[in-house]
Image 1 (cartoon, rainbow, N blue to C red):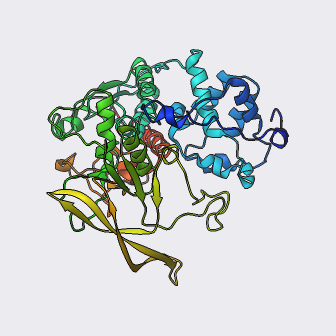
Image 2 (cartoon, one colour):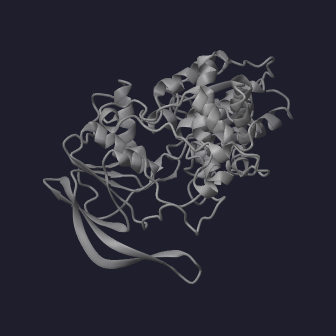
Image 3 (cartoon, rainbow, N blue to C red):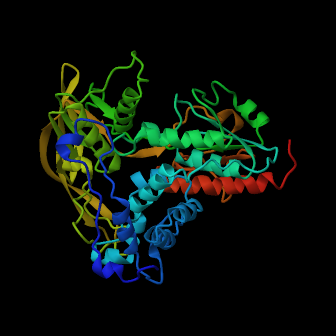
Length: 476
Protein backbone atom coordinates (compact mmCIF):
# COMPACT_ATOMS: atom_id res chain seq x y z
CA UNK A 1 0.00 0.00 0.00
CA UNK A 2 1.13 3.55 -0.70
CA UNK A 3 0.78 4.65 2.92
CA UNK A 4 0.19 1.60 5.14
CA UNK A 5 0.10 3.69 8.34
CA UNK A 6 -2.35 6.38 7.22
CA UNK A 7 -5.17 4.76 9.19
CA UNK A 8 -3.33 5.74 12.36
CA UNK A 9 -3.29 9.46 11.59
CA UNK A 10 -6.21 10.13 9.23
CA UNK A 11 -9.72 9.78 10.68
CA UNK A 12 -12.66 8.45 8.70
CA UNK A 13 -14.46 11.27 6.95
CA UNK A 14 -17.82 10.87 5.23
CA UNK A 15 -19.19 13.24 2.61
CA UNK A 16 -22.44 13.61 4.55
CA UNK A 17 -25.84 14.78 3.33
CA UNK A 18 -27.28 18.00 2.03
CA UNK A 19 -28.99 20.14 4.74
CA UNK A 20 -32.33 18.65 5.79
CA UNK A 21 -34.33 21.84 5.30
CA UNK A 22 -33.02 22.02 1.75
CA UNK A 23 -33.28 18.42 0.58
CA UNK A 24 -36.82 17.64 1.80
CA UNK A 25 -38.20 20.06 -0.78
CA UNK A 26 -36.81 18.21 -3.80
CA UNK A 27 -35.93 14.73 -5.01
CA UNK A 28 -32.28 15.45 -5.81
CA UNK A 29 -29.63 13.09 -4.43
CA UNK A 30 -29.11 13.75 -0.74
CA UNK A 31 -25.52 12.52 -0.52
CA UNK A 32 -22.74 15.00 -1.11
CA UNK A 33 -19.25 14.30 -2.44
CA UNK A 34 -15.76 14.97 -1.15
CA UNK A 35 -13.11 16.65 -3.28
CA UNK A 36 -10.36 14.52 -4.80
CA UNK A 37 -7.77 15.37 -2.16
CA UNK A 38 -10.12 14.24 0.60
CA UNK A 39 -10.86 11.09 -1.38
CA UNK A 40 -7.14 10.36 -1.73
CA UNK A 41 -6.75 10.76 2.02
CA UNK A 42 -9.70 8.46 2.73
CA UNK A 43 -8.37 5.86 0.30
CA UNK A 44 -4.97 6.01 1.98
CA UNK A 45 -6.60 4.66 5.17
CA UNK A 46 -6.82 1.23 3.52
CA UNK A 47 -4.21 -0.58 5.57
CA UNK A 48 -1.97 -3.46 4.60
CA UNK A 49 -4.15 -5.83 6.63
CA UNK A 50 -2.91 -9.06 5.07
CA UNK A 51 -6.31 -10.70 4.63
CA UNK A 52 -8.76 -8.40 2.82
CA UNK A 53 -12.05 -9.37 4.43
CA UNK A 54 -13.67 -6.58 2.40
CA UNK A 55 -13.00 -8.64 -0.73
CA UNK A 56 -14.48 -11.71 0.97
CA UNK A 57 -17.66 -9.87 1.99
CA UNK A 58 -18.36 -8.30 -1.41
CA UNK A 59 -20.79 -10.38 -3.53
CA UNK A 60 -18.91 -9.20 -6.62
CA UNK A 61 -15.47 -9.92 -5.20
CA UNK A 62 -14.33 -6.33 -5.76
CA UNK A 63 -10.59 -5.88 -5.14
CA UNK A 64 -10.87 -2.99 -2.72
CA UNK A 65 -7.22 -2.68 -1.55
CA UNK A 66 -5.96 -2.43 -5.12
CA UNK A 67 -8.17 0.42 -6.25
CA UNK A 68 -7.95 2.25 -2.91
CA UNK A 69 -4.20 2.32 -3.41
CA UNK A 70 -4.61 3.59 -6.97
CA UNK A 71 -6.87 6.42 -5.78
CA UNK A 72 -4.23 7.39 -3.22
CA UNK A 73 -1.63 7.45 -5.99
CA UNK A 74 -3.93 9.62 -8.13
CA UNK A 75 -4.17 6.91 -10.79
CA UNK A 76 -7.90 7.18 -11.36
CA UNK A 77 -7.93 5.48 -14.77
CA UNK A 78 -6.20 2.39 -13.41
CA UNK A 79 -8.58 2.45 -10.45
CA UNK A 80 -11.68 2.33 -12.65
CA UNK A 81 -10.12 -0.42 -14.76
CA UNK A 82 -9.54 -2.57 -11.67
CA UNK A 83 -13.07 -1.89 -10.44
CA UNK A 84 -14.52 -2.72 -13.86
CA UNK A 85 -12.92 -6.16 -13.75
CA UNK A 86 -15.50 -7.25 -11.19
CA UNK A 87 -18.29 -4.64 -11.23
CA UNK A 88 -20.21 -3.53 -14.31
CA UNK A 89 -21.89 -0.56 -12.66
CA UNK A 90 -19.87 1.04 -9.83
CA UNK A 91 -21.90 4.24 -10.24
CA UNK A 92 -24.97 2.29 -9.04
CA UNK A 93 -23.41 0.29 -6.22
CA UNK A 94 -21.43 3.32 -5.08
CA UNK A 95 -24.77 4.97 -4.36
CA UNK A 96 -27.17 2.28 -3.14
CA UNK A 97 -25.10 -0.64 -1.82
CA UNK A 98 -25.25 -1.19 1.98
CA UNK A 99 -21.50 -1.83 1.75
CA UNK A 100 -20.94 -5.25 3.34
CA UNK A 101 -17.29 -4.62 2.42
CA UNK A 102 -17.10 -1.79 4.95
CA UNK A 103 -18.67 -3.91 7.66
CA UNK A 104 -15.88 -6.45 7.12
CA UNK A 105 -13.07 -3.90 6.88
CA UNK A 106 -10.49 -4.53 9.61
CA UNK A 107 -10.90 -0.91 10.69
CA UNK A 108 -14.56 -1.67 11.35
CA UNK A 109 -13.35 -3.27 14.56
CA UNK A 110 -12.89 0.32 15.73
CA UNK A 111 -16.09 1.48 13.98
CA UNK A 112 -14.10 3.53 11.47
CA UNK A 113 -13.87 1.47 8.27
CA UNK A 114 -12.48 2.82 5.02
CA UNK A 115 -15.16 4.78 3.12
CA UNK A 116 -15.19 2.12 0.40
CA UNK A 117 -18.68 2.79 -0.96
CA UNK A 118 -18.19 6.54 -1.25
CA UNK A 119 -14.76 6.00 -2.79
CA UNK A 120 -16.33 3.67 -5.35
CA UNK A 121 -18.85 6.31 -6.36
CA UNK A 122 -16.02 8.85 -6.57
CA UNK A 123 -13.97 6.62 -8.88
CA UNK A 124 -16.93 6.21 -11.21
CA UNK A 125 -17.75 9.94 -11.27
CA UNK A 126 -14.16 11.00 -11.90
CA UNK A 127 -13.96 8.43 -14.69
CA UNK A 128 -17.14 9.75 -16.32
CA UNK A 129 -16.05 13.36 -15.84
CA UNK A 130 -12.68 12.77 -17.51
CA UNK A 131 -14.03 10.61 -20.30
CA UNK A 132 -12.31 7.48 -19.02
CA UNK A 133 -15.47 5.39 -19.33
CA UNK A 134 -15.96 4.68 -22.99
CA UNK A 135 -18.11 2.15 -24.85
CA UNK A 136 -16.37 -1.19 -25.29
CA UNK A 137 -18.01 -2.97 -28.22
CA UNK A 138 -16.82 -6.55 -28.81
CA UNK A 139 -14.07 -7.08 -31.38
CA UNK A 140 -15.98 -9.93 -33.01
CA UNK A 141 -19.44 -11.48 -33.09
CA UNK A 142 -20.19 -15.13 -32.43
CA UNK A 143 -23.41 -15.20 -34.45
CA UNK A 144 -25.37 -16.24 -31.36
CA UNK A 145 -28.45 -14.30 -30.26
CA UNK A 146 -29.51 -13.92 -26.62
CA UNK A 147 -32.71 -12.42 -25.23
CA UNK A 148 -32.59 -10.86 -21.78
CA UNK A 149 -36.01 -10.37 -20.20
CA UNK A 150 -35.90 -7.58 -17.65
CA UNK A 151 -33.60 -4.56 -17.47
CA UNK A 152 -32.84 -4.29 -13.78
CA UNK A 153 -29.32 -4.67 -12.36
CA UNK A 154 -29.18 -8.44 -13.01
CA UNK A 155 -30.49 -8.15 -16.56
CA UNK A 156 -28.19 -5.26 -17.48
CA UNK A 157 -25.13 -6.99 -16.03
CA UNK A 158 -25.93 -10.24 -17.85
CA UNK A 159 -26.58 -8.35 -21.08
CA UNK A 160 -23.32 -6.41 -20.95
CA UNK A 161 -21.26 -9.51 -20.16
CA UNK A 162 -22.88 -11.50 -22.97
CA UNK A 163 -22.34 -8.63 -25.39
CA UNK A 164 -18.68 -8.41 -24.38
CA UNK A 165 -18.40 -12.09 -25.27
CA UNK A 166 -19.55 -11.29 -28.78
CA UNK A 167 -23.17 -12.41 -28.65
CA UNK A 168 -25.93 -10.23 -30.06
CA UNK A 169 -28.08 -9.26 -27.08
CA UNK A 170 -31.60 -7.86 -27.04
CA UNK A 171 -33.02 -6.65 -23.73
CA UNK A 172 -36.82 -6.70 -23.35
CA UNK A 173 -38.47 -4.42 -20.80
CA UNK A 174 -42.21 -4.27 -20.05
CA UNK A 175 -42.03 -0.64 -18.83
CA UNK A 176 -41.42 2.48 -20.87
CA UNK A 177 -37.86 3.03 -19.68
CA UNK A 178 -34.86 0.79 -19.02
CA UNK A 179 -33.66 0.22 -15.46
CA UNK A 180 -36.12 -2.00 -13.63
CA UNK A 181 -35.71 -1.68 -9.86
CA UNK A 182 -33.01 0.96 -10.32
CA UNK A 183 -35.40 3.27 -12.15
CA UNK A 184 -38.81 2.48 -10.69
CA UNK A 185 -38.04 1.18 -7.20
CA UNK A 186 -35.22 3.35 -5.84
CA UNK A 187 -36.09 7.00 -5.10
CA UNK A 188 -34.29 9.75 -7.01
CA UNK A 189 -32.90 11.14 -3.78
CA UNK A 190 -30.77 7.99 -3.56
CA UNK A 191 -30.16 7.39 -7.27
CA UNK A 192 -30.71 10.19 -9.78
CA UNK A 193 -32.11 8.67 -12.97
CA UNK A 194 -29.71 10.59 -15.22
CA UNK A 195 -27.07 8.24 -13.81
CA UNK A 196 -28.98 5.32 -15.36
CA UNK A 197 -29.55 7.16 -18.65
CA UNK A 198 -25.82 7.84 -18.93
CA UNK A 199 -25.06 4.15 -18.61
CA UNK A 200 -27.78 3.07 -21.03
CA UNK A 201 -26.33 5.36 -23.72
CA UNK A 202 -22.99 3.59 -23.34
CA UNK A 203 -24.59 0.14 -23.51
CA UNK A 204 -26.34 1.08 -26.73
CA UNK A 205 -23.03 2.26 -28.18
CA UNK A 206 -21.56 -1.11 -27.24
CA UNK A 207 -24.17 -2.80 -29.40
CA UNK A 208 -26.96 -3.81 -27.03
CA UNK A 209 -30.51 -3.56 -28.36
CA UNK A 210 -33.29 -2.43 -26.03
CA UNK A 211 -36.99 -3.01 -26.62
CA UNK A 212 -39.28 -1.30 -24.11
CA UNK A 213 -43.05 -1.51 -23.61
CA UNK A 214 -42.70 -5.18 -24.54
CA UNK A 215 -44.07 -7.97 -22.38
CA UNK A 216 -43.02 -11.52 -23.18
CA UNK A 217 -46.00 -13.84 -23.34
CA UNK A 218 -48.23 -10.97 -24.36
CA UNK A 219 -46.56 -8.73 -26.95
CA UNK A 220 -44.18 -11.49 -28.03
CA UNK A 221 -45.09 -15.14 -27.61
CA UNK A 222 -43.02 -17.57 -25.57
CA UNK A 223 -42.57 -19.77 -28.63
CA UNK A 224 -41.20 -16.90 -30.69
CA UNK A 225 -38.60 -16.01 -28.06
CA UNK A 226 -37.41 -19.60 -27.86
CA UNK A 227 -37.33 -19.95 -31.63
CA UNK A 228 -35.59 -16.68 -32.49
CA UNK A 229 -32.92 -16.74 -29.78
CA UNK A 230 -30.20 -19.25 -28.94
CA UNK A 231 -30.60 -18.53 -25.22
CA UNK A 232 -32.93 -16.59 -22.97
CA UNK A 233 -32.01 -14.97 -19.64
CA UNK A 234 -34.97 -14.20 -17.38
CA UNK A 235 -34.17 -11.33 -15.00
CA UNK A 236 -37.59 -10.02 -14.02
CA UNK A 237 -36.86 -9.46 -10.33
CA UNK A 238 -39.00 -10.44 -7.34
CA UNK A 239 -41.86 -8.01 -7.74
CA UNK A 240 -44.64 -9.77 -5.83
CA UNK A 241 -45.01 -7.84 -2.56
CA UNK A 242 -45.65 -9.62 0.72
CA UNK A 243 -49.12 -8.72 1.92
CA UNK A 244 -50.84 -8.70 5.30
CA UNK A 245 -54.26 -10.38 5.51
CA UNK A 246 -56.02 -8.85 8.47
CA UNK A 247 -59.30 -7.11 9.25
CA UNK A 248 -59.79 -3.95 7.22
CA UNK A 249 -57.28 -4.80 4.51
CA UNK A 250 -59.85 -3.82 1.86
CA UNK A 251 -60.08 -0.23 3.11
CA UNK A 252 -58.91 2.53 0.81
CA UNK A 253 -55.60 4.18 1.61
CA UNK A 254 -53.57 0.98 2.05
CA UNK A 255 -50.92 0.36 -0.61
CA UNK A 256 -47.79 -1.68 -1.20
CA UNK A 257 -44.58 0.29 -0.78
CA UNK A 258 -43.46 -0.36 -4.34
CA UNK A 259 -46.71 0.99 -5.78
CA UNK A 260 -46.09 4.20 -3.84
CA UNK A 261 -42.40 4.49 -4.73
CA UNK A 262 -42.70 3.59 -8.40
CA UNK A 263 -45.60 6.00 -8.85
CA UNK A 264 -43.52 8.88 -7.50
CA UNK A 265 -40.68 7.99 -9.87
CA UNK A 266 -43.11 7.85 -12.79
CA UNK A 267 -44.46 11.27 -11.85
CA UNK A 268 -40.95 12.71 -11.93
CA UNK A 269 -40.43 11.15 -15.36
CA UNK A 270 -43.81 12.46 -16.52
CA UNK A 271 -45.01 8.99 -17.49
CA UNK A 272 -47.82 8.66 -14.96
CA UNK A 273 -51.08 7.72 -16.73
CA UNK A 274 -53.91 10.11 -15.94
CA UNK A 275 -56.25 7.14 -15.47
CA UNK A 276 -54.36 5.85 -12.42
CA UNK A 277 -55.35 7.15 -8.99
CA UNK A 278 -52.58 9.21 -7.41
CA UNK A 279 -51.16 7.90 -4.13
CA UNK A 280 -50.31 11.02 -2.16
CA UNK A 281 -49.03 11.59 1.37
CA UNK A 282 -49.70 15.33 1.28
CA UNK A 283 -51.35 16.61 4.48
CA UNK A 284 -51.82 13.03 5.75
CA UNK A 285 -50.70 11.01 8.72
CA UNK A 286 -48.65 8.21 7.18
CA UNK A 287 -47.86 4.81 8.66
CA UNK A 288 -45.10 2.71 7.11
CA UNK A 289 -45.26 -0.95 8.15
CA UNK A 290 -41.84 -2.52 7.78
CA UNK A 291 -38.47 -1.35 9.05
CA UNK A 292 -36.16 -2.13 6.13
CA UNK A 293 -34.64 -0.03 3.36
CA UNK A 294 -37.85 0.02 1.34
CA UNK A 295 -39.71 1.34 4.37
CA UNK A 296 -37.05 4.01 4.80
CA UNK A 297 -37.50 5.01 1.15
CA UNK A 298 -41.23 5.40 1.82
CA UNK A 299 -40.46 7.65 4.78
CA UNK A 300 -38.29 9.98 2.69
CA UNK A 301 -40.78 10.05 -0.18
CA UNK A 302 -43.76 10.76 2.12
CA UNK A 303 -41.87 13.63 3.75
CA UNK A 304 -41.12 15.15 0.34
CA UNK A 305 -44.76 14.85 -0.64
CA UNK A 306 -45.77 16.92 2.38
CA UNK A 307 -46.97 14.38 4.95
CA UNK A 308 -48.21 15.80 8.26
CA UNK A 309 -46.54 13.02 10.22
CA UNK A 310 -44.70 9.81 9.33
CA UNK A 311 -44.53 6.79 11.63
CA UNK A 312 -42.59 3.63 10.83
CA UNK A 313 -43.19 0.41 12.75
CA UNK A 314 -41.32 -2.88 12.77
CA UNK A 315 -42.43 -6.25 14.16
CA UNK A 316 -38.89 -7.18 15.23
CA UNK A 317 -37.20 -5.74 18.34
CA UNK A 318 -35.06 -2.62 18.16
CA UNK A 319 -31.53 -3.61 17.09
CA UNK A 320 -28.65 -2.73 19.39
CA UNK A 321 -26.66 0.41 18.69
CA UNK A 322 -22.96 0.16 17.92
CA UNK A 323 -21.87 -3.47 18.14
CA UNK A 324 -23.92 -6.65 18.35
CA UNK A 325 -22.26 -9.77 19.83
CA UNK A 326 -24.71 -11.97 17.91
CA UNK A 327 -23.28 -10.73 14.58
CA UNK A 328 -19.56 -10.21 15.24
CA UNK A 329 -17.02 -8.85 12.78
CA UNK A 330 -16.40 -9.66 9.95
CA UNK A 331 -20.04 -10.68 9.41
CA UNK A 332 -22.68 -8.13 8.42
CA UNK A 333 -23.85 -6.58 11.72
CA UNK A 334 -27.46 -6.54 12.80
CA UNK A 335 -27.44 -3.11 14.46
CA UNK A 336 -29.61 -0.01 14.46
CA UNK A 337 -29.50 1.71 11.08
CA UNK A 338 -30.54 5.33 10.73
CA UNK A 339 -30.97 6.48 7.15
CA UNK A 340 -31.00 10.00 5.73
CA UNK A 341 -34.80 9.68 5.51
CA UNK A 342 -35.08 8.85 9.20
CA UNK A 343 -33.06 11.96 10.03
CA UNK A 344 -35.61 14.07 8.16
CA UNK A 345 -38.34 13.38 10.69
CA UNK A 346 -39.89 10.02 11.53
CA UNK A 347 -41.38 8.36 14.60
CA UNK A 348 -39.82 4.89 14.68
CA UNK A 349 -41.25 2.09 16.81
CA UNK A 350 -40.29 -1.57 17.22
CA UNK A 351 -41.82 -4.84 18.47
CA UNK A 352 -45.27 -4.01 17.13
CA UNK A 353 -47.53 -6.52 15.40
CA UNK A 354 -50.29 -5.13 13.18
CA UNK A 355 -53.68 -6.58 14.15
CA UNK A 356 -56.30 -4.64 12.18
CA UNK A 357 -57.03 -1.61 10.03
CA UNK A 358 -59.86 0.63 11.15
CA UNK A 359 -61.76 2.94 8.82
CA UNK A 360 -64.37 5.59 8.30
CA UNK A 361 -66.49 5.85 5.13
CA UNK A 362 -64.38 3.14 3.54
CA UNK A 363 -61.02 4.88 4.16
CA UNK A 364 -58.38 3.78 6.65
CA UNK A 365 -58.03 6.11 9.63
CA UNK A 366 -56.42 4.00 12.36
CA UNK A 367 -54.25 0.90 12.71
CA UNK A 368 -54.54 -1.40 15.71
CA UNK A 369 -51.18 -2.74 16.88
CA UNK A 370 -50.01 -4.99 19.70
CA UNK A 371 -46.72 -4.88 21.57
CA UNK A 372 -44.82 -8.16 21.33
CA UNK A 373 -41.81 -9.70 23.06
CA UNK A 374 -39.15 -11.86 21.47
CA UNK A 375 -37.13 -14.71 22.97
CA UNK A 376 -35.08 -17.64 21.76
CA UNK A 377 -36.48 -21.14 21.92
CA UNK A 378 -34.47 -24.28 22.69
CA UNK A 379 -33.09 -24.35 19.13
CA UNK A 380 -31.96 -20.72 19.27
CA UNK A 381 -34.73 -19.56 16.96
CA UNK A 382 -36.42 -16.27 17.83
CA UNK A 383 -40.13 -16.60 18.62
CA UNK A 384 -42.71 -13.84 19.02
CA UNK A 385 -44.78 -13.63 22.19
CA UNK A 386 -47.96 -11.47 22.21
CA UNK A 387 -48.26 -9.26 25.28
CA UNK A 388 -51.93 -8.31 25.00
CA UNK A 389 -50.99 -4.61 25.14
CA UNK A 390 -52.70 -2.90 22.23
CA UNK A 391 -53.19 0.65 21.00
CA UNK A 392 -54.07 2.47 17.80
CA UNK A 393 -51.99 4.64 15.50
CA UNK A 394 -53.69 7.38 13.51
CA UNK A 395 -53.09 6.84 9.79
CA UNK A 396 -54.79 8.09 6.64
CA UNK A 397 -52.20 6.45 4.38
CA UNK A 398 -50.68 3.05 5.12
CA UNK A 399 -47.69 1.74 3.16
CA UNK A 400 -46.81 -1.96 3.37
CA UNK A 401 -43.04 -2.36 3.16
CA UNK A 402 -42.93 -6.04 4.07
CA UNK A 403 -40.54 -7.25 1.41
CA UNK A 404 -41.16 -9.38 -1.67
CA UNK A 405 -41.96 -13.05 -1.92
CA UNK A 406 -41.16 -14.06 -5.52
CA UNK A 407 -41.41 -12.91 -9.15
CA UNK A 408 -44.78 -11.82 -10.42
CA UNK A 409 -46.30 -14.92 -12.03
CA UNK A 410 -47.96 -13.28 -15.00
CA UNK A 411 -47.79 -16.15 -17.47
CA UNK A 412 -44.19 -15.59 -18.53
CA UNK A 413 -42.96 -18.77 -20.25
CA UNK A 414 -45.76 -20.78 -18.60
CA UNK A 415 -46.75 -22.41 -21.87
CA UNK A 416 -43.22 -23.77 -22.11
CA UNK A 417 -43.48 -25.41 -18.70
CA UNK A 418 -41.09 -23.29 -16.67
CA UNK A 419 -40.95 -24.53 -13.08
CA UNK A 420 -40.82 -22.61 -9.79
CA UNK A 421 -39.31 -23.67 -6.48
CA UNK A 422 -41.13 -23.89 -3.15
CA UNK A 423 -40.66 -20.17 -2.53
CA UNK A 424 -42.13 -19.24 -5.90
CA UNK A 425 -38.81 -18.28 -7.52
CA UNK A 426 -37.74 -19.64 -10.91
CA UNK A 427 -36.12 -23.01 -10.24
CA UNK A 428 -32.58 -23.22 -11.64
CA UNK A 429 -29.71 -25.70 -11.47
CA UNK A 430 -26.14 -24.85 -10.53
CA UNK A 431 -25.58 -23.58 -14.07
CA UNK A 432 -28.43 -21.05 -13.64
CA UNK A 433 -30.54 -22.97 -16.20
CA UNK A 434 -34.26 -23.37 -15.68
CA UNK A 435 -36.48 -26.37 -16.45
CA UNK A 436 -36.79 -25.10 -20.04
CA UNK A 437 -33.74 -25.85 -22.24
CA UNK A 438 -31.58 -22.79 -22.94
CA UNK A 439 -33.68 -20.62 -20.64
CA UNK A 440 -31.72 -19.23 -17.68
CA UNK A 441 -32.64 -17.04 -14.71
CA UNK A 442 -30.63 -14.35 -12.94
CA UNK A 443 -30.99 -12.08 -9.93
CA UNK A 444 -34.00 -11.88 -7.66
CA UNK A 445 -36.13 -13.94 -10.07
CA UNK A 446 -34.04 -16.97 -9.10
CA UNK A 447 -32.72 -16.12 -5.64
CA UNK A 448 -35.52 -14.08 -4.10
CA UNK A 449 -35.36 -10.40 -3.20
CA UNK A 450 -31.85 -9.27 -2.35
CA UNK A 451 -29.34 -6.48 -2.90
CA UNK A 452 -28.48 -4.67 -6.13
CA UNK A 453 -24.88 -5.80 -5.74
CA UNK A 454 -25.98 -9.45 -5.49
CA UNK A 455 -28.20 -9.02 -8.55
CA UNK A 456 -25.23 -7.75 -10.56
CA UNK A 457 -23.13 -10.67 -9.34
CA UNK A 458 -25.88 -13.12 -10.31
CA UNK A 459 -26.22 -11.50 -13.74
CA UNK A 460 -22.49 -11.88 -14.35
CA UNK A 461 -22.50 -15.54 -13.29
CA UNK A 462 -25.54 -16.35 -15.41
CA UNK A 463 -23.96 -14.68 -18.43
CA UNK A 464 -20.84 -16.77 -17.92
CA UNK A 465 -22.90 -19.98 -17.83
CA UNK A 466 -24.85 -18.98 -20.96
CA UNK A 467 -21.61 -18.19 -22.78
CA UNK A 468 -20.11 -21.58 -21.93
CA UNK A 469 -23.15 -23.44 -23.23
CA UNK A 470 -23.47 -21.33 -26.38
CA UNK A 471 -19.85 -21.80 -27.32
CA UNK A 472 -20.16 -25.51 -26.83
CA UNK A 473 -22.87 -26.03 -29.45
CA UNK A 474 -23.55 -25.22 -33.09
CA UNK A 475 -25.38 -22.03 -33.99
CA UNK A 476 -28.99 -22.39 -34.99
